[in-house]
Length: 191
Length: 158
Image (cartoon, rainbow over all chains, first blue to last red; front, side):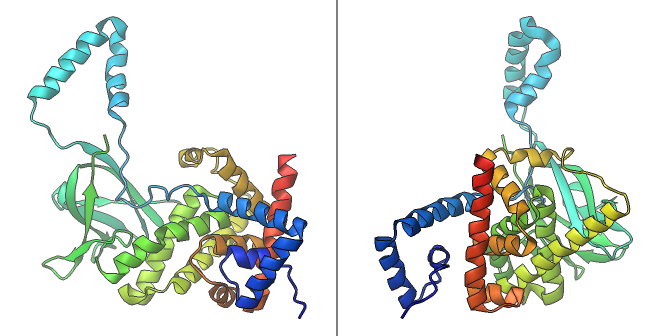
């Protein structure tokens, strides 16, 4: 039985072959050099296609933090090279004898809520005070940038001053004592 | 970890990859990924853990965003956010950038098919349901889309 073999390479790539197609595929690879070359090319193309960058830091679980080197460089730059070594030594001593305070990490909180007129954030890291999020144009997104100490925190969004919702992009959440739900945010110091 | 958390961790990456190929915009794809999970959660609750449903929602979100962009462009509000977007610079790998540009040159229907199969999360049958075409048609169309993509990449490489 003659079949339309046009798509055989793709069905092969996508693991969608039935037995007949498998048989025809093997035969064709064996007898048709052009088909063999094209299938290899398509496989390479697919490998490249599936090589994609990681998901960007849209969810608040990901935290950006300048590297220690960058931070040291920033501190040392105004002092000039002559004093840099000395300053570094002082800094090392200083950090050795200070109890380590939790690092503050930049955190972008984003929420998609096109129907809300006002969105606020409240959380353990701001003593459950409320901070307003700003709308991003007319996109329906709201955002706020905050510095959050490394560690585990609880937070939630408040819509229009009353409705409390957890962050849908953070898988871990827990019920609070007032019938609402808090997201659990893990902030890690990435140095 | 509840079912929804597992669902989220499992499909977050592939939905993002799908949206990135479809839109060619790193930041937008990230935002739409969040929006898709939000919509899925608010409409179907924590039990609505169905990948076909999620990809349908993601697809609609992307189409909405594209429509909005066209309207903005028509009303003269043509702001090219691309250059000002620092996260875009994270896409350093030239090959990936070249691939995204090539996908961008495909017709929407081809781009969608390429993005859906490459996400590796849906079968031909599920893709057919999503795009409302037969499974046999998916076979043929996916392959043609791949060949067109190859032609574009070869052109660019010369």
